[in-house]
Image (cartoon, rainbow, N blue to C red; front, side):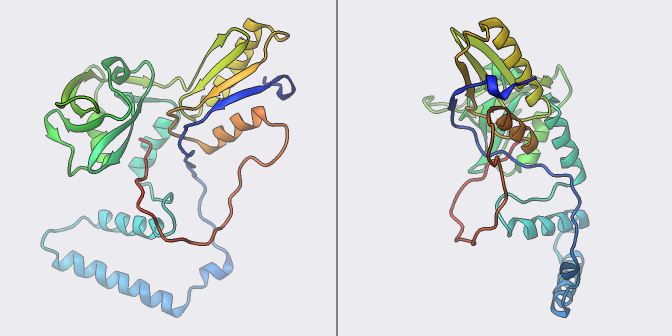
Length: 284
């Protein structure tokens, strides 16, 4: 059990990306929100008309579910860059990842200029052992171009049966030519907390915030305290470099372990501002 009074946070190595909130709570509509105006229903009728026109007249037959999913995402992304809709399969995939165990290569990725960019390889995974580096741009998967695929489609291709191989082609800063890296898929068990002692200071690295993070932090603090000795322990360095985020409740629990008072996180409304040209990262 972490005792706040006995802990001293010596320093935090900054560099982690924003923590992503995954919420499973249902929407609850208040009375004014549910009482839509006549104009709102007219707009919904317009949406239905456009939907039917696309279904009947588009040059290729579209999938109804894809049209509706895209429309929902369009509505949510117009609110802010961080709101999106997870269809059932994506939601299940997210739950698998946040449990800290899933099948694949072991890399955190995002999309940049149509290519898959490696945010960071996860320690002790096939990708890490094969030499994949943060900042690598993946251009091909088994010889197939990544350009034109969505991030979800690319991630789906990188996942597969355990003990099967995939060859990724990467562009890396400092190398003149793309490099092929063959990786054998494995079950990825993410150990989100690692630690060791540095003389009289405990070093704790948190690679991501999944369901095991706070328990791992408690274990790290207990073992380091016992190894160094409570009287000799000066404090802890908490390393968050290349941490892509994860579960908000775990990030709050970690913060709370080192704070005696004060607000940790809150949600406030701000005035909208003109969007800037930024690239949004996605945790996969």
